[in-house]
Length: 265
Image (cartoon, rainbow, N blue to C red; front, side, top):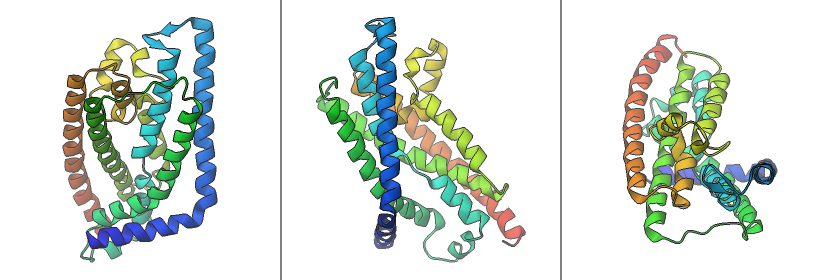
């Protein structure tokens, strides 16, 4: 734990040297959220007061809380793992007492902590700006399930990103794969629009995928458009995905490591 905290602190301090870059990204996030709100406001002017069970106020809240949840759990671990493998830096971790996964996890927590705090602040500012249209949920049971869901979503996203990064054992560049998966994740998370706007079959399938628990499902839970039982079922689905991803990482790591050592990187 001491080593973990030391690494987190070191990378947190390092990230402070890129304050302008972090600020630039946050301004982009604010702009994206505002554009989505303006776009849906225009859609509602032409379509009426309710679209697929969402009022304009509910849609605005969905966008605001969904983006807020999304910035809490995202990471950029895939590109870091891919770079370590591609550039041969993985070798020095194989002989250290601290395992590579523990190191890279603590590094990522430290690296994203500043940007995440800034993202949370930027999204909070947007929510405050639209506070008259924002729907508040103070139901403690719903909020408890919501917090648990976001914690599991955070670990799911970390494991998924780590797994994508391990593809670098076989190919030199993973940017294309990462970009494709990110777009698929964004779509099935409900980041572009609520998944309930999709055909019923696709909407149901999304509940069995890990992506929807980073945006759509927690936002629906916040709006009480799904009940607590469905939320608890979602926690079970997330737990199953975490176990599945851990197993996949274990298998891919072993095979990839044999190839890594075999080519003498």
